[in-house]
Image (cartoon, rainbow, N blue to C red; front, side, top):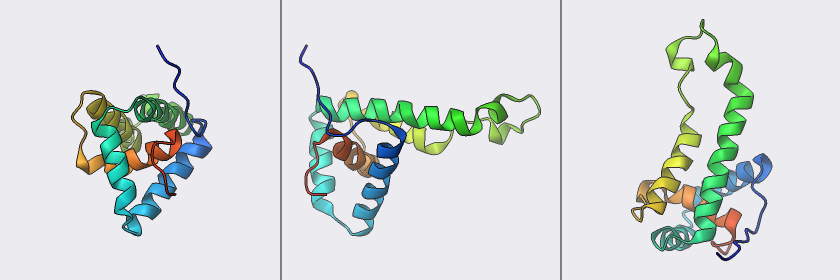
Length: 123
């Protein structure tokens, strides 16, 4: 199996930066970035998939650090025990791309992962 190299380390700081950059690119309607990420997701690019997988793990770790004790407390309301949306969306983006059926609704997550992996150029 070939070694996969990512442009950026997958740590909380870079995942947050990638997310912010993707949001800004979306606001600026930078469709070329979305097109690159979409093609990589459709092609099941190994670096993109690795970035999606590792970033979703980092987001779940961040959620655990922020909400873990509260979520596990027996006194906590049910609405505060469910997983946060962002980690679930990244996990779903990974699952769909890995299955070969990426979702256009998640294209900006693919853009963020594309920046992390180096697959998307032009930031």
